[in-house]
Length: 255
Ligand SMILES: Nc1ncnc2c1ncn2[C@@H]1O[C@H](COP(=O)(O)OP(=O)(O)OP(=O)(O)O)[C@@H](O)[C@H]1O
Ligand SMILES: [Mg+2]
Image (cartoon, rainbow, N blue to C red; front, side, top):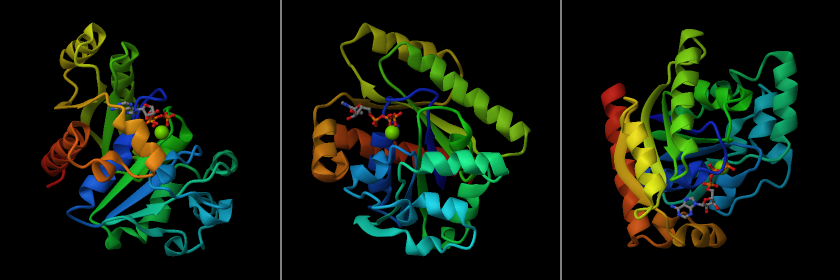
């Protein structure tokens, strides 16, 4: 599976989800986590920071002759390798947009690495722009996430429409396999209304709801996703259940 975690707006839990899903998948297979966001938060979730652009995905996207294996960070967690981002990915993306190379760039970089891994998890920035499209073009499946914020239901529908459009353009064959709540406020009315609105859309709403938990920001400080730093906590259990649900959904789409 090559899973891109996407949303139409920022700050909804994509990076937290991508890091925890990668760590959960890494318990059973070989995983490559790919940070396609210039904020480089996915690397930071594992304590990895690229020292320079040359040490990151940005260099690989721009130079078709560069060796991706030289940039991959090995064993950032059990079963997990990582391709880090760097803030200069922003400049690289702008340059590749001007030359026409951005859309297929992530797919091209990953091609030679795929045989090393059972799963790839791509974290994207919080929009449906050209860099997110490049990540989606490298994916076969997409997960989008929502919170208890009423804007979230609209965001999930926007991701679905974005994918429909780019499948029609033949930019990607990736399928939306899940819409997951990554910050469930179990006592909040807004959360229930958002989930209710999503249930009515026909989008593939996943049943696992990751609870809001202070352990999540604490795990960011600890540079370990919560499934590794607090493996017996309810929030870790939810992320492990979400990982199973995502794998089952991917299996149904591409057995
Ligand atoms: N289940 C949770 N409980 C509590 N806080 C959470 C939870 N999930 C995520 N957060 C917090 O919400 C904030 C946003 O999460 P995250 O960085 O994963 O979102 P994002 O969608 O990747 O944001 P961006 O679009 O900026 O990349 C972070 O401070 C994170 O610690
Ligand atoms: Mg993020």
